[in-house]
Length: 454
Ligand SMILES: *[C@@H]1O[C@H](CO)[C@@H](O)[C@H](O)[C@H]1NC(C)=O
Ligand SMILES: *[C@@H]1O[C@H](CO)[C@@H](O)[C@H](O)[C@H]1NC(C)=O
Ligand SMILES: *[C@@H]1O[C@H](CO)[C@@H](O)[C@H](O)[C@H]1NC(C)=O
Image (cartoon, rainbow, N blue to C red; front, side, top):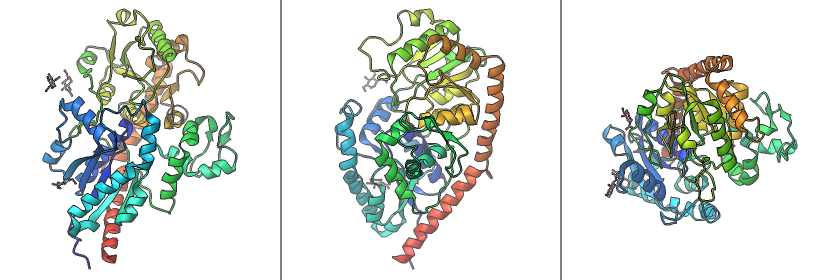
């Protein structure tokens, strides 16, 4: 009989250093702590540096202090990835990625070892929660005898594509090689065209995908628990943004309802200058009011400005250009009527939650598959240029269709329905809440089972 049964389960959570993954991972930490678990949460040092600088103008901040003072048992720490903070991880991504594969797991081992030892008497109450794209969990979990929970931040449809990679290979549908064909033999997926595959990803990062999946293939239970945000996004106990955010609320409050197009391509994706020029051209033709997020580094530019000359002057009275912003507050504002998006999963879920239909311009990875969900399955968005090159005439036409008229009304009707599905999932007896509760119970039971074996 173990002495640990009265101790709370303690999740060790080490984040993946990407903005789009950090947002739901932090939400998960809050959620699981609110269920009475202890959490030790670690950001990569450089992520800590960016968040604390951009949100607090200081590097010596405990990002979870406010969460803790609200009663949540979350301890915050950082982990080094082996590079100095100033190292440009995106410019030298080969070196960085190589080290991520080879050296980072040792750092994790060090940290987890320290955490587990510091409470050696209760060691068996620890368990791991990591992003499915992390490469270290299986080894670490085995070494320390920890329950290993894997957190997937993209749609189930995308997971299923990874999961059935071998089957797709056997049927000759991966690699895709530019052949567009419908695939209708994947369990649970009626039909998907190979053009909607995460194909860049499958080729370049198959290693990650395979490992992630083989870890999950041992018939482990799955729990559909999203979305993890609080309804009004007001759960701002914990800063998540690596970049300083412009507050667009006052500007939006002076605009008529549904009149503003919000444009953002997310935190990571790059696009080419020509796309920016054509979108700018489309904005001029359409006369729409807009907020446009032009993130530093989103275009590999030759040093000059990326907007056409005179664009800012010509749109000063109806446009706001910002380097980054509090996206969910923009989407929730009644003035916002449409979202031109790269189809990142956080963006899509936030947009649906806010009832804002989308124009889809996916750039890479799961965004390609996410577009299918938004446009083909749920009918809450339209394609930008149907995969062809972007022209300003079509941009203007699509903006027109999104913002007003018959098509816009249809999109708004459909998004109401999808939003309701989301809302239902989050109700107290909704699927998301129920699934989360069974996850909590199962983790507790599994930890106890392991304690008894010791
Ligand atoms: C940030 O901190 C520096 C040094 O402490 C200070 O000089 C600067 O004014 C601060 N900036 C803001 C926006 O608070
Ligand atoms: C928080 O975690 C750090 C690093 O593992 C540890 O040194 C510290 O004792 C922990 N604090 C609490 C209150 O658990
Ligand atoms: C943004 O501005 C609005 C209106 O000026 C204000 O009410 C709100 O608190 C601000 N939000 C943040 C996060 O500072």
